[in-house]
Image (tube, rainbow, N blue to C red):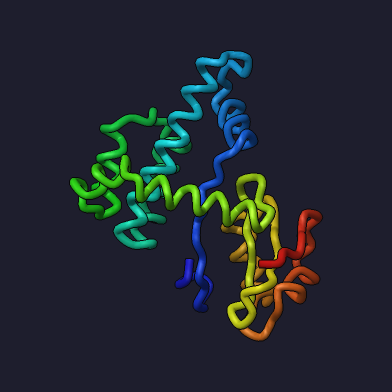
Length: 186
């Protein structure tokens, strides 16, 4: 993304895990919404996917993001089922140390990192997926929460000069015509 925008942007994926994400997953895959067993399976898989991402991120943020994007492609675009064989294949494709990754995906450290991320999301008011929080690199105390934000929106905002080094999050919000903007305090 940095190459396409021709600027320095620091970004971090925080996997969100709450009742909304569970329900969205059930609907996305057309699963039985009334089955407690199905709901428990979805919770278990989502939780392990997040632990996998945390473990991959321990080997570097770029590798973690690469792992997550490759896994999303396999699950959503290629319609593969989540299982250990897929996890190993994606980890190797992402350039991860497989032995370390397999150990870390069940570690207390991964669980603690996930809990910390959920706390950050809650503090910033993020309650649903596809949300972005944009902070001014010079003033990290105030930002803009944008729901339903995606890669194309970021590229478009940059190409239309809605993002630049001199712009505050509030100035960005004025140019970004989206109904779901909210100023957040850190």
